[in-house]
Length: 483
Image 1 (cartoon, rainbow, N blue to C red):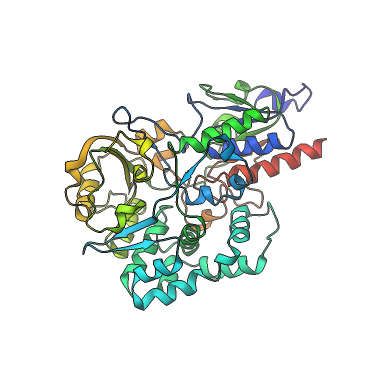
Image 2: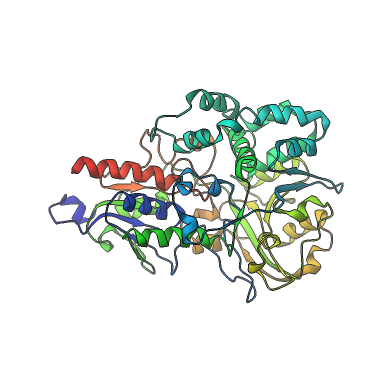
């Protein structure tokens, strides 16, 4: 442990809290502490804030890409973000006609629309009623449910324990159990795709909850993109933090605690591996598991994606997988069989259909990724484009330029993406909820002045800031106890 912490607090602290890592969770933790009157400084290794919410010119001039997160169903629904005046600092959510579409090889598509009825109808008459019965009981309670769900574990008492308990009974089993209520493949495929957003095997614990949360989020407030790119979320949080008196230092890599100024608390938006190395925790997080990686391609296109089905043309997010069996096989290949899938399941985002600022007039930016084994060093570009051609014939003819990022490149761009795992930890087994350790206090560490707030802590992956929000609660309680 670094000398200044071993000495206790004999030396006057310069700050109440120092935050390391300016991703959405680190920024949120810093804002929450600053809002409560604590002095805060944030340190970021890269030249700009953002973490998984950045925007850059990756291909050609004038094409603004999101290197990681691009569509934000959890962001617009985040209790933390909704409690902040981020719109005052330039954040603007943009909604397409459809939040999400899922095309099929026969040229048709199912959709995840704002309307439950429209969504249910796209699944076909045999499953429309089952889908409505699945989601409609939760929608009137959505705001309390999402707060309760994303505040677990014991950072706050549930506001609606009955609805949360019902949701748990529905969602804690594997998604394959939940989809037994559907008779046809269309609904099963869409739901499998929703689960795959967290790279979880379809038979895993609580994967039913994952799919249900994404569906409910779309019905409640949509799956928007941010005008100008995902950097808008990070920039709004940073501007708000500065107005609250917080300091932000970029191009500042932290390799050990002695690199930081004295503070009463240190909060790390890093992987558990990095925190253990910086803080000298030895093998404290050795049992923490990282998941499969992703291979991502950002495209500059000479026009819209030529989807065969009409629905994907008006959806910012498009899932690509022929059926639930193909999706399940792709997930197993990457996470259990240590090989790249022949037909990868893909999440794709086309933000410029609603945001003309993202590309020159008449052009488009487009983003796609498939799952691959952790640390995989191959090239999935051809497999990705063969999949796209199945559902959008002539796609390759629209490509002006592409930028490819496999697990090694992603890990270099964002140190939290260990082995290319953009969720900063496997979302399977007990680690779905009990991350990064088996503990009722997941944001604390072996040292009482050091905390962790990254996606390695509950509620897990996504640009929602709730891991930072929950960790900040643990920090300010500790600081107030000290007086």
